[in-house]
Amino acid sequence: MNCSQGMPDTTICPNPIKQFELLAGMRLVWSQHVYWTRLLLISIAERLKDQNATTARLLQNPADIAKIFAQYYPVSAAATIEQLLTEHLQIGAELITALRDEQTAQAQALTRRWYQNADQMADAFSGINPFYEREVVRNMLYTHLELTTKEVAARLAGNYPEDIAAFDQVERQAMEMADYFSAGIMHQFPQRFV
Image 1: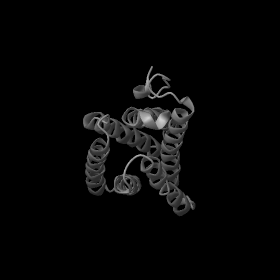
Image 2 (image 1 turned 30 degrees about the horizontal axis):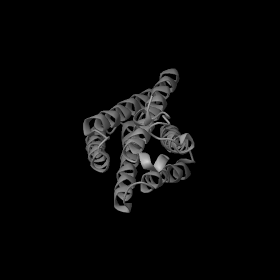
Image 3 (image 1 turned 120 degrees about the horizontal axis):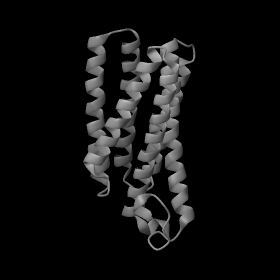
């Protein structure tokens, strides 16, 4: 295993503590991304009173993710990541609401915007790091959207076992994305991990 696989290798990245700090930090923000998205899904689906507070907390997440990237990339690149992730979450919230309210045409339009946003994110990530292959990033983001859509559909249908199983898939895939992003940083900047 080596630095590019997201796992410690003291011959390439001699300081495993720095590697684990990046891996743990990246996993934390992406796990928060899916956990707070799930809580918002539940709030919207069940029309809970905590929806505004939950939305506000969820929308802190893009800045938390961007803060990690800002340690390695220009402020403008981190700001683009933050903006695109914020749009991703806002579109997702609107989509859940449209699906709940059975507004089919609006849901279809929002779904198209969601995937366009994913394309923009793939461009942004692949533009800052040669180890972030655009198609790999795009496929990961599309999978994230597909799994989240499956989770939303199950929740809105009241199929709670399927909803929970879908979230388990969302969570696992988010950790894979986090590790991919960490690995790319370690591969691009091995000197930062000595």
